[in-house]
Image: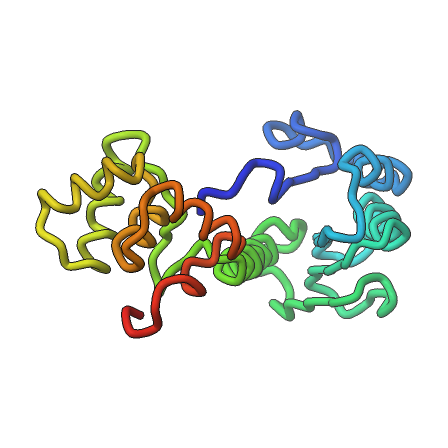
Length: 212
Protein backbone atom coordinates (compact mmCIF):
# COMPACT_ATOMS: atom_id res chain seq x y z
CA UNK A 1 0.00 0.00 0.00
CA UNK A 2 3.00 2.33 0.05
CA UNK A 3 2.72 2.91 3.78
CA UNK A 4 5.75 4.18 5.72
CA UNK A 5 7.45 1.56 7.94
CA UNK A 6 6.45 3.34 11.14
CA UNK A 7 2.72 3.25 10.31
CA UNK A 8 2.21 -0.46 10.97
CA UNK A 9 4.69 -1.95 13.44
CA UNK A 10 4.97 -5.54 14.58
CA UNK A 11 6.00 -6.42 18.14
CA UNK A 12 6.70 -10.03 19.11
CA UNK A 13 7.70 -11.51 22.44
CA UNK A 14 11.39 -12.32 22.22
CA UNK A 15 12.11 -9.66 19.59
CA UNK A 16 13.27 -10.19 16.02
CA UNK A 17 15.15 -13.39 16.90
CA UNK A 18 11.82 -15.00 17.77
CA UNK A 19 10.73 -14.65 14.14
CA UNK A 20 13.44 -17.13 13.14
CA UNK A 21 13.52 -19.40 16.18
CA UNK A 22 10.93 -19.84 18.93
CA UNK A 23 11.69 -18.16 22.26
CA UNK A 24 8.80 -19.62 24.22
CA UNK A 25 9.51 -18.21 27.67
CA UNK A 26 9.50 -14.63 26.39
CA UNK A 27 5.71 -14.58 26.17
CA UNK A 28 5.36 -15.18 29.92
CA UNK A 29 6.52 -11.70 30.97
CA UNK A 30 3.84 -8.96 31.05
CA UNK A 31 6.38 -6.30 32.08
CA UNK A 32 8.36 -6.78 28.87
CA UNK A 33 5.15 -6.44 26.87
CA UNK A 34 4.49 -3.11 28.56
CA UNK A 35 8.09 -2.03 27.97
CA UNK A 36 7.81 -2.71 24.24
CA UNK A 37 4.78 -0.41 24.10
CA UNK A 38 6.71 2.29 25.93
CA UNK A 39 9.66 1.94 23.56
CA UNK A 40 7.32 2.32 20.58
CA UNK A 41 6.10 5.60 22.13
CA UNK A 42 2.47 4.55 21.72
CA UNK A 43 0.01 7.36 22.36
CA UNK A 44 -3.61 8.51 21.95
CA UNK A 45 -3.40 8.56 18.14
CA UNK A 46 -2.40 4.89 17.91
CA UNK A 47 -4.25 1.58 17.77
CA UNK A 48 -2.64 -1.45 19.41
CA UNK A 49 -3.84 -4.93 18.44
CA UNK A 50 -2.93 -7.75 20.80
CA UNK A 51 -2.89 -11.32 19.49
CA UNK A 52 -3.22 -14.32 21.80
CA UNK A 53 -5.00 -17.42 20.53
CA UNK A 54 -5.32 -18.76 24.08
CA UNK A 55 -6.38 -15.32 25.44
CA UNK A 56 -3.97 -15.67 28.38
CA UNK A 57 -0.53 -14.70 27.03
CA UNK A 58 1.03 -12.43 29.71
CA UNK A 59 3.24 -10.50 27.25
CA UNK A 60 0.20 -9.50 25.19
CA UNK A 61 -1.93 -8.65 28.23
CA UNK A 62 0.86 -6.48 29.63
CA UNK A 63 1.21 -4.70 26.29
CA UNK A 64 -2.52 -4.02 25.99
CA UNK A 65 -2.79 -2.71 29.54
CA UNK A 66 0.10 -0.32 28.93
CA UNK A 67 -1.40 0.80 25.61
CA UNK A 68 -4.71 1.60 27.33
CA UNK A 69 -2.87 3.46 30.08
CA UNK A 70 -1.19 5.61 27.42
CA UNK A 71 -4.52 6.46 25.78
CA UNK A 72 -4.31 4.26 22.69
CA UNK A 73 -7.29 2.42 21.24
CA UNK A 74 -6.95 -1.33 21.72
CA UNK A 75 -8.07 -4.47 19.90
CA UNK A 76 -7.68 -8.04 21.12
CA UNK A 77 -7.75 -11.02 18.75
CA UNK A 78 -8.20 -14.43 20.35
CA UNK A 79 -9.53 -17.89 19.57
CA UNK A 80 -10.79 -18.48 23.10
CA UNK A 81 -13.90 -17.30 24.94
CA UNK A 82 -12.12 -17.21 28.32
CA UNK A 83 -10.92 -13.61 28.36
CA UNK A 84 -11.35 -10.48 30.44
CA UNK A 85 -14.02 -8.44 28.60
CA UNK A 86 -12.34 -5.24 29.80
CA UNK A 87 -8.98 -6.13 28.29
CA UNK A 88 -9.50 -4.10 25.10
CA UNK A 89 -11.90 -1.66 23.46
CA UNK A 90 -12.71 -4.20 20.75
CA UNK A 91 -12.40 -7.97 21.14
CA UNK A 92 -12.45 -10.20 18.06
CA UNK A 93 -13.12 -13.82 18.96
CA UNK A 94 -12.36 -16.37 16.27
CA UNK A 95 -14.28 -19.52 17.13
CA UNK A 96 -12.20 -21.91 15.04
CA UNK A 97 -12.77 -24.87 17.38
CA UNK A 98 -10.15 -27.37 18.55
CA UNK A 99 -7.10 -27.88 16.37
CA UNK A 100 -7.23 -31.05 14.29
CA UNK A 101 -3.82 -31.91 15.72
CA UNK A 102 -3.75 -30.93 19.38
CA UNK A 103 -0.75 -29.19 20.84
CA UNK A 104 -0.30 -25.92 18.96
CA UNK A 105 -2.43 -22.90 18.07
CA UNK A 106 -0.06 -22.06 15.21
CA UNK A 107 -2.24 -24.18 12.91
CA UNK A 108 -5.77 -23.02 11.99
CA UNK A 109 -5.91 -20.47 14.82
CA UNK A 110 -2.81 -18.82 13.39
CA UNK A 111 -4.25 -18.88 9.88
CA UNK A 112 -7.55 -17.36 10.99
CA UNK A 113 -5.72 -14.64 12.91
CA UNK A 114 -3.64 -13.72 9.86
CA UNK A 115 -6.81 -13.38 7.78
CA UNK A 116 -8.33 -10.99 10.33
CA UNK A 117 -5.15 -8.92 10.45
CA UNK A 118 -5.30 -8.65 6.66
CA UNK A 119 -8.89 -7.42 6.92
CA UNK A 120 -7.99 -4.80 9.54
CA UNK A 121 -5.01 -3.39 7.67
CA UNK A 122 -6.74 -3.48 4.29
CA UNK A 123 -9.78 -1.63 5.64
CA UNK A 124 -7.51 0.91 7.33
CA UNK A 125 -5.55 1.53 4.13
CA UNK A 126 -8.77 2.05 2.17
CA UNK A 127 -10.06 4.53 4.77
CA UNK A 128 -6.90 6.66 4.69
CA UNK A 129 -6.92 6.92 0.92
CA UNK A 130 -4.36 4.43 -0.32
CA UNK A 131 -6.98 2.86 -2.59
CA UNK A 132 -8.97 4.46 -5.41
CA UNK A 133 -11.88 2.33 -6.60
CA UNK A 134 -10.31 -1.10 -6.09
CA UNK A 135 -6.76 -0.16 -7.08
CA UNK A 136 -3.67 0.40 -4.92
CA UNK A 137 -2.86 3.87 -6.22
CA UNK A 138 -0.38 4.99 -3.55
CA UNK A 139 2.40 3.86 -5.81
CA UNK A 140 5.64 5.37 -7.03
CA UNK A 141 7.21 3.62 -10.01
CA UNK A 142 10.71 2.89 -8.74
CA UNK A 143 11.47 -0.42 -10.51
CA UNK A 144 10.41 -2.27 -13.67
CA UNK A 145 7.60 -4.16 -11.91
CA UNK A 146 6.14 -1.02 -10.34
CA UNK A 147 6.51 0.93 -13.58
CA UNK A 148 4.41 -1.69 -15.38
CA UNK A 149 1.85 -1.67 -12.56
CA UNK A 150 1.63 2.13 -12.63
CA UNK A 151 0.98 2.07 -16.38
CA UNK A 152 -1.78 -0.53 -15.95
CA UNK A 153 -3.48 1.48 -13.20
CA UNK A 154 -3.36 4.69 -15.22
CA UNK A 155 -4.59 2.91 -18.33
CA UNK A 156 -7.53 1.40 -16.42
CA UNK A 157 -8.58 4.73 -14.89
CA UNK A 158 -7.76 7.26 -17.63
CA UNK A 159 -8.10 5.18 -20.84
CA UNK A 160 -5.21 7.19 -22.27
CA UNK A 161 -3.03 5.69 -25.01
CA UNK A 162 0.36 4.31 -23.90
CA UNK A 163 2.42 7.28 -25.08
CA UNK A 164 0.28 9.76 -23.14
CA UNK A 165 0.42 7.55 -20.03
CA UNK A 166 4.22 7.55 -20.24
CA UNK A 167 4.28 11.34 -20.58
CA UNK A 168 1.84 11.79 -17.68
CA UNK A 169 3.79 9.44 -15.42
CA UNK A 170 7.02 11.23 -16.29
CA UNK A 171 5.52 14.64 -15.44
CA UNK A 172 4.24 13.18 -12.15
CA UNK A 173 7.74 11.91 -11.28
CA UNK A 174 6.43 8.34 -11.31
CA UNK A 175 3.75 8.91 -8.65
CA UNK A 176 0.36 7.43 -9.61
CA UNK A 177 -1.75 9.52 -7.22
CA UNK A 178 -0.14 12.70 -8.48
CA UNK A 179 -0.62 11.62 -12.10
CA UNK A 180 -4.33 10.93 -11.55
CA UNK A 181 -5.00 14.30 -9.90
CA UNK A 182 -3.01 16.07 -12.63
CA UNK A 183 -5.03 14.32 -15.33
CA UNK A 184 -8.54 14.56 -13.91
CA UNK A 185 -8.21 18.02 -12.36
CA UNK A 186 -5.97 19.67 -14.96
CA UNK A 187 -3.33 20.61 -12.39
CA UNK A 188 0.44 20.97 -12.53
CA UNK A 189 2.49 18.53 -10.49
CA UNK A 190 3.21 20.99 -7.63
CA UNK A 191 -0.48 21.94 -7.42
CA UNK A 192 -1.54 18.29 -7.53
CA UNK A 193 0.90 17.39 -4.75
CA UNK A 194 -0.41 20.30 -2.67
CA UNK A 195 -4.02 19.20 -3.17
CA UNK A 196 -3.20 15.62 -2.20
CA UNK A 197 -1.49 16.82 0.97
CA UNK A 198 -4.41 19.14 1.77
CA UNK A 199 -6.83 16.21 1.52
CA UNK A 200 -4.55 13.91 3.53
CA UNK A 201 -3.92 11.62 0.59
CA UNK A 202 -7.57 10.89 -0.26
CA UNK A 203 -7.68 11.55 -4.01
CA UNK A 204 -11.32 10.40 -4.08
CA UNK A 205 -12.06 13.71 -2.32
CA UNK A 206 -10.25 15.64 -5.07
CA UNK A 207 -11.14 14.01 -8.37
CA UNK A 208 -14.59 15.11 -9.62
CA UNK A 209 -17.26 12.52 -8.87
CA UNK A 210 -18.19 12.43 -12.55
CA UNK A 211 -14.84 10.70 -13.10
CA UNK A 212 -15.40 8.04 -10.42
